Image (tube, rainbow, N blue to C red; front, top):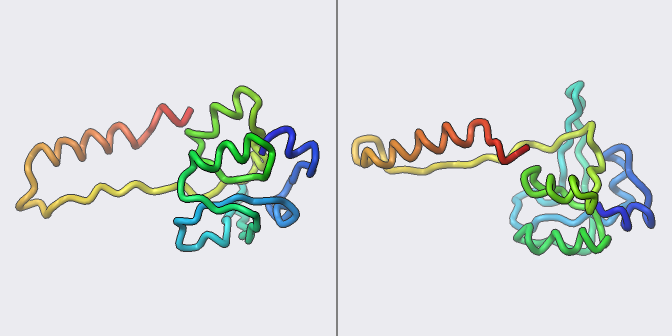
Length: 134
């Protein structure tokens, strides 16, 4: 959330407090009506966010959040720039959302070209510990 949003609506300190906030979401999810949080002790909580906007692209969501119109879940690699310069505040640093997944679909091994295997090995090595996450 932006500092302006938090000044007007308050700062939630627990996922359950999000029910009192304008939560912006992603329309492409199969279960867009829930956010699942986990803390360091392994405690889990599911929140059903509600808000006036659902988008299919994070690029449509960021200007809305920066303008102070609500809160959103953003991938770390996107949010870190805005958090670092103070335009956004990490609301629940003691809680995390599930990590996303990336799938690399290829033909079967018998018909797969060697360069596809090389690309798969490269992507696995590069994305296993991404430095762009910070």
